[in-house]
Structure formats: C-alpha cells, structure tokens
Image 1 (tube, rainbow, N blue to C red):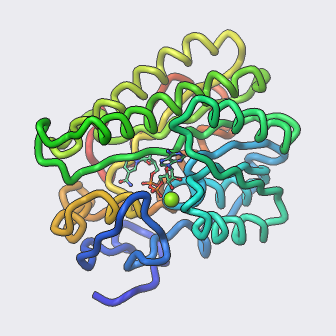
Image 2: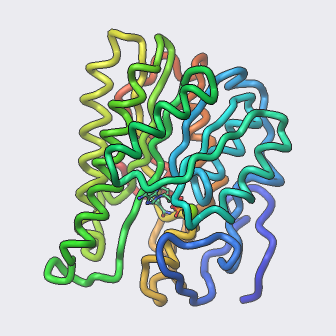
Image 3: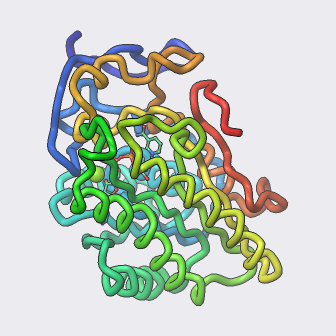
Amino acid sequence: MSTQSLAGSGPDQYPSEFPGQQQEPPGWTHVMNPVPDHGEQSYVGSGRLSGLRALITGGDSGIGRAVAIAYAREGADVVLAYLPEEQSDADETVAVVAATGRRVVTVPGDLTSHEACLELAERAASELGGLDILVNNAGFQMARSPGIGDVSPGQLDRTVRTNFYALFWLTQAVIPHLARGACIINNSSIQAYDPSVSLLDYAATKAAINNFTVNLAAELGPKGIRVNAVAPGPIWTPLQPATQPEEKVEKFGQDTPLGRAGQPAEVAPAFVFLASPSEASYVSGTVLGVTGGKPVF
Ligand code: NAD
Ligand code: MG
C-alpha cells in the first residue's frame, strides 16, 4: 500500500489495513503511512465555541491535533501541551490552527511531574486570560508486553503517571481557573470496557479515568462545571506504530463492527459536542463512545 490521501465521507472513506511500520514512543506524524486525517481539509466550524479558551494536552498529534483544529475553527483559542521531543508535530498543528486567526500557545513539557502540571495550568490561564475547557488527552500505552510478567516497573510507572497522575494533577490545578459554564473532557478508551491482554496496565488507567469522570462530575455539578469523557476505539495516530507490534498495526481496527480504524478527524466532533455550552448544557458525568461499533457498557 502506498501513501494515500485521506479525504471524503461515509463509513468506507478510510483504509482498513495499513503497511507494516514501527516507531519508538512518543511517535511522530510525518513518518506515518498514511498520515492520519485530522480534519485539515474537512472540518468546518460554525462558531460553536466562539470566544472560549481551551487547554489541550497531547495537542501536537493524533486526536489532540484534530481537537485543536476543530476547536479553533469553532472559534476557540487554544493552548497545546506536548512532550519537548514532539516539537515538529506541534509546529504542524500550530500552522493549521494559526490559519484560523485564533490564538494558539505552545507549552512543551513532561506532565509526569506534579510541578509541570502546576506550571502548565498557570501558564495556560495567564496566556489566554482564563480557561473554559480542559481536554485531558495526553496518554501513554505500551502494547508490546504479552503478559503481566512483561510489564516493567518503568513501563507501569510511565503509564500510570501519564494517564492518571498527570490528569489528576492538571485537573486539580486548572479547577481554580474555571467558572460556571466551564467543562472538563477526559480521553478514556474502549480499553476501559473491553480490555486487551497486551494493554493490562493502560486499560486499568482508562477504567480509572471513567470512574474519576463520573465522580468529579458529581462534585463539580453544583458549581456549574460539566465533566465528561470520550472513549475512542482504535484510532490511527502515532501512538499505534510507536507501541503496537507490527502485525497488529497492519490489521489495526479490523476487529470493529465497521471493520476499520477510525481517524482523529472522526473523534474530534465528540470533543466539540461535549465542549459546546449550548449543545451539551445538560450533559455531564457521561462517557461518549467513538468506537466503530464496539460497545461501551
Ligand atoms: P498521540 O500519540 O498522537 O497523542 C498522545 C499524546 O500524549 C502525545 O502526542 C504526547 O504529546 C502526549 N503525552 C504522552 N506522554 C506525555 C507526557 N509524559 N507529558 C506530556 N504529554 C505526553 O496518540 P492519540 O492516540 O491521539 O492519543 C491521545 C489520547 O487518546 C490518549 O489518551 C490515548 O490513550 C487515547 N486513545 C487513543 C486511542 C487510539 O487508538 N489511538 C484509542 C483510545 C484512546
Ligand atoms: Mg504526539
């Protein structure tokens, strides 16, 4: 299969198999074949997030990049957080977002430290003059460990710190900046419901995120702050060739009812809906599946 353009609409618009490929974490967009569709050519905004201010972790690539593009085209200013080694991916995202005329600020850093989470929250709020939307999207997985005995202490630490500690710390630090009407959206996974043996540690963090989402929604509801999550199925992003074995990459997503992996552009609209103060005004404490048909219950 050669590099191809990903554009169109409908269930069959995207590939259902991929050329074998491998990267090392965190993974980069430009070496992917095909390069994912983040909605660069397709997403059309209609002012649904006009004047809002969003902090998006992992905003350099994959789902985070698609969310950043969609949010900016809906009228939001955005802060993008990502790892320093992902600067080239962040630069590409910035170029597309900046073309909307909305403000985009980049804050590279490793969020597995508490201090980095505190600094990011303060910097984001001061750069944008406040915050209305927190998208906890950064995540790490390693799917090359066949069983529990193969999960090293370092892998477990990185997975839990990235997916749960960082999300918890950043949320704690951002809440003082949120007013009535603000919202928090966490990136969960189909793995919270239908865990793969090769993702034992990762799947557990995603189940924890679902529990955290519902519980925090109960706490923040009286303050007028909504808390939700999106649970994507298999989505074609740098995370996959950087963490899955090659044979899994080739067939990635074929085990869904729609028979293929999703693209980041197909997930971003769920984040737009949950962030929209008018459309999702009564939606809190829920997890919205974007799974290609796999059940999220
Ligand atoms: P991705 O690699 O494009 O994005 C993940 C991002 O997380 C990276 O770009 C990086 O900036 C950020 N990140 C990782 N470790 C970090 C750290 N220590 N400090 C700061 N940032 C860090 O891949 P993606 O698939 O778009 O992942 C985004 C989210 O979607 C993750 O939470 C992932 O678990 C979730 N998700 C992905 C899939 C999928 O199939 N791709 C499915 C379900 C859920
Ligand atoms: Mg990245």
